[in-house]
Image 1: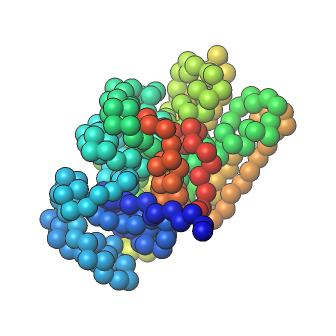
Image 2: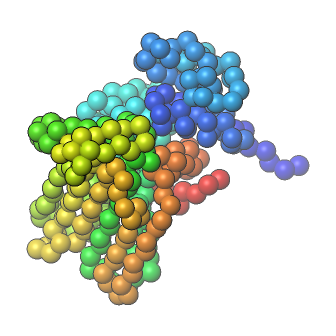
Length: 334
């Protein structure tokens, strides 16, 4: 008789746009069983998770306010965590999840490679994971794949690697409103610059991707050059349901370069703006041989959900501890 594996039991933690999309994706997978959902929004608590996620069928599972409430009603193997980008706010959630005996796959960008800038949070999560004998992973399309895992995998074709450059161009008009807000759409230049100064504006993840690539090749980072500039509307414009006046922000142009041993080893460019042209991802590797890949069609939201869901099996099977995508076998649609 064939060995039939039991489905992996999943709790969805965070019912924002990505969390809801993850719920819909998981409902299509026979290998996954959604057993609970958690969110602090009073407008969502108590409602059927399928209703909140705009799925096509009711599940008879109510959204609950805490993980402890969920575990009073059901058992689980893993949590799919989609609540925030920054470790200073989500580390208590992650250590709670691990402490309750659950693996966790998280969309928190700073978790994708936290040791460079957030070692104290990485250490806390690592301790919690090892004490519980469980695994934590931060991933997504970027960081998590396009600017780190994919370039690193491509270097398997190289005898020598001298420099890695990655550029991502996104038409923000095709993305959800929370993403547009994240890149400052509609702000004045002054508001944008104030948010940059607070550390809460622009794409989160360039530092993590850059640090992962440099460390993978044994390079210490001497210095980092970073810039975050607004992209401004040259005339009044309307894009989808968004109207922006001339001179206001329609996106962000962000660059980060890491210098190792006096030479720029990694550079990352992130450009996201309403009606941005030539939407694509470009990876260049200077080395022996030199390589270039141009990737078209990556939908950031769909790809993020896909990677999160597809990583679940790898994380459940992994050894305990805080992992990166580099540590796991290749993640693919399963």
